[in-house]
Amino acid sequence: MSEKKHLILGIESSCDETAAAIVAGGRQILSSVVASQTEIHRKYGGVVPELASREHLRQIVPVVREAIEEANITLREVDAVAVTQGPGLIGALLVGVTYGKVLAMSLHKPLIAVNHLEGHVHAVLLEASSAGREPQLPALCLIVSGGHTILYHVSEAANVTAEVTDGRFFRFSYYKIGGTRDDAAGEAYDKVARMLALGYPGGPIIDRLALDGNAQAVRFSDPKMTGNPYDFSFSGIKTAVLHHLRRNQSFEAEIETRRQALAKGERSADRLRALSSAATLDLVASFQRSVVSNLLSQTFAALVQYPARAIFVSGGVAANSELRRTFESESAHRGIEVFFPSRALSTDNAAMIAAAGYAHFMAGDRADSTLNAEANLPLSGPARPIIGP
Ligand code: KG4
Ligand code: ZN
Image 1 (spheres, helix red, strand yellow):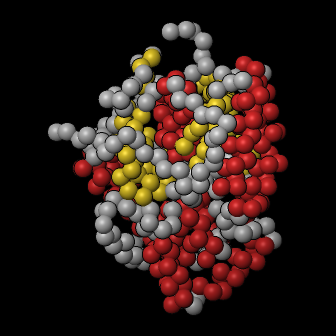
Image 2 (image 1 turned 90 degrees about the vertical axis):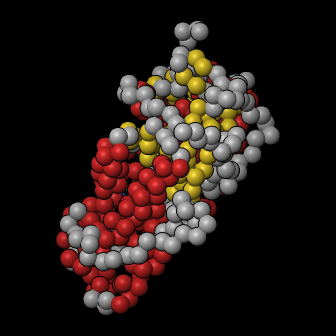
Image 3 (image 1 turned 45 degrees about the vertical axis):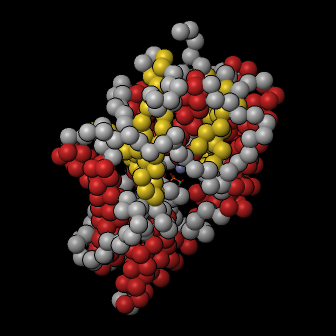
């Protein structure tokens, strides 16, 4: 094997982050630039697709340039361009796909199409391996963000044409065990935060306020799943929070006070905490307990039918402190390792796209000028995993 570490330029624009990164040899991040649009979408309490596309158009060129400069390389030294093909917002994806395509063609470099969800899986592999903590596969990977709540069984596709270099496989297979039927978990956090006037995004502030509340105070029933028992559903709990607020008029005044504070730009956790009653703290703590215990119980229930050697949790909600604590203690109890990427790699970034792209590059996968963005691009491997005793 040659000593040269291939340099992959990753480009990501599936939602509200414009990102570019240079990753060497699939493991070493030379640069990772993320231009977040949170400030633009904040006043709407969620991502506005039209505004997201416009902002990607403004940001894509400077973000790629910055990634190249930070990595201290020239564009000509890049060995391949890996770009997120989907899933995501179509107008947002098109910006990255079109730019990546033109760049690869003009540089005469290979173009690699990457599924965004595969990127989240590789965020875990990338960071764990660069920290010398190589995860064992197969793994169950829970991707939990503002746009997704999906549980995959991830394995090395050794029975397909697997390429092994440097002890590593470059073909993976992904089997979707379950997914959300309605809202993503992060979306539920954002919507509940909006109802309570706690600002956007909702996850970090609810995570903080929940520390001071009683998680047993409000009882939410678990979603009833017919069909696939490993699916998720979060719209029921969101509606239950709404009904709880309607039944208890006492919430109205403090919600209005916080709304005014947010309008004045007062959105620090300390300020919002000071403007929240014990009843609000109890409500958010109970909401969080219900969401996190559902994510935990679905994942560990799946482990019985889909045995794995590690658990990965990736996506923006993986930053949640209660989620980390409960997954860590349950994993220790069951004798299985759990991996969370750092905050920077949990949320959308292009290093994970470059890392996933590297595996495809090494496996010989190439896209061409017909590559098109796909809003609902599925991530699925060759087959249902073969689960043996
Ligand atoms: O992965 P991400 O940055 O963007 C996409 O959705 O693609 O995830 C953002 C989501 C938001 O819904 C946000 O509320 C949630 O992740 N989030 C959290 C926390 N930090 C971010 N949810 C719960 N607890 C957190 N600490
Ligand atoms: Zn994502």
